[in-house]
Image (cartoon, rainbow, N blue to C red):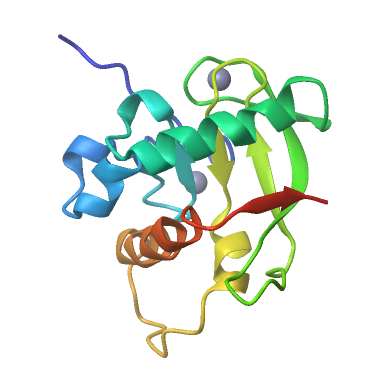
Length: 153
Ligand SMILES: [Zn+2]
Ligand SMILES: [Zn+2]
């Protein structure tokens, strides 16, 4: 089977598929990452984690009828994506900082800019990371966040 190459909705770079990533966290959450901007694309069909798949479906419900249309296309199905503000509820009941998530109203995929997740993750102290290892660090943050409830704001 020939798998088609997906492209970053921001800069057009060919995305690295979960199968070609070194880290299991990409496969677990069906994450394709951009080797240029460290952005993450999540697709439930590529994910093996039930928690992730359920969460993506719940997030998708929030994009069917709501959200602001964007001039970018879903890497998976070419539909016009939408953007919404979003926060995760931490264990102590407080909310994380708001982050923007781009969602596809058609296929349950989401796109996260690296900068959005960087705002939620503590600084690594290592600024010489390559975009791919940065994407790996962000995927680990996201893997933890997907266990938390979320709210659209
Ligand atoms: Zn990119
Ligand atoms: Zn889509």
